[in-house]
Image (cartoon, rainbow, N blue to C red):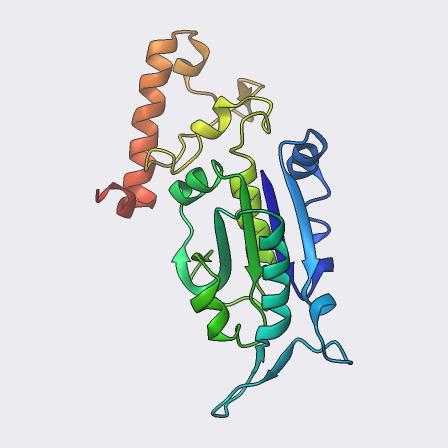
Length: 225
């Protein structure tokens, strides 16, 4: 999988992709992540990538020209399955979205900034708009990092135990059950006996019951379907 990220602040994306699972995924060639600086495509001598909005109002708007030039350059090199715009008014990201995106080959992500991007970019290039929550960040870079992390970990071979991702919260519209590790007792707090029993059938039953119980208590909205 190849992911191209378009941003005015590429330095914000250096750390998220240079450690742990994301770094190993790139080292193993499971994913190629390329970060592109939109300023490099500005035709303005000062390399500006924003301007005042028509009609007046507070806040600057990301200019259409450098973004369009960069998108066209990348599209000339390969076919993109999705061109995603990270924006607060996009669709709230859910696990099923990540599952679907992990199956794609080429994805482009545009990070919003300032007051937003010239609407003509959204109308003519963007195929999917995503938000990571009902709040506003200073820019789309951190949101893009969240999206990439959530998607890349689902690619076969990225996690050491590929079944781990299949039992994560939200995969079956349920939250994950409680988990425990050694020692079996600490400060008088004990691990549930069933988890120590070695009875796989009973352990799975316990986990299903606890997952449903936790979901009903914490995220009943997930059970509406």
